[in-house]
Amino acid sequence: MQVVFAKSVQGASHIRRENEEISHGRKFPCQDKSIAENDLVAADGTKFKFLSVCDGHGGAPYFRSETGADFAIQVVKDILMRNMKRIKELAATKDYEAIKNQLSIAIPKRWREKVENDLMQNPITDQEYLFLGEEKPDVVEKYKDGIDLHSIYGCTSVIYFSTDSFWYALQIGDGDFSISYDGKNFELPMPEDK
Image 1: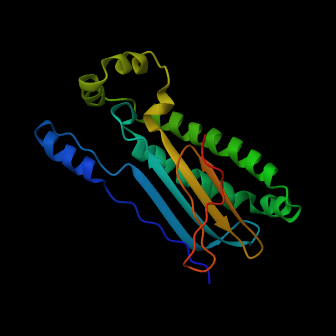
Image 2: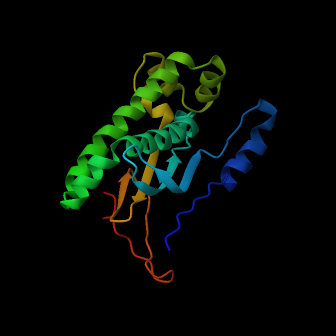
């Protein structure tokens, strides 16, 4: 029986830093997000398991990476729910490269759309600029000029999904993914990130 599971926790360095900065009202939340769902049903009726782990960049310039990680999970899940029929067709012909190409185009495109929408609805605040300026004044100017705003939400992502007939994993950015067929031995099915 296959089971997918995930858990994200606030790291020790974020807890320590938040305690040091408490008088400034600064928070350093867990910027990593994960989800595991064992009983999803896609639009075409396909049952599948889904796992996504998104690691928010966490540095000062990436002060909305927690939100970016949430967006990444939402985007991937939605794409899989809507497009599983096509993905299954490609998997049946063993065209895994086409699956990778389609997902690696669709995921960042949809993620950027969510980021742009969020920036329109929630512009960068003076408080965010103030905190960022304490550590990275040059980045404040870049953001005020509208340059590289997507990086504010930056995160990496490791994605896994499986049906009764195949499984697939995809990695955007760094991270590790291992799989075990017997619960004892683990292997890394994806090439090391370059």
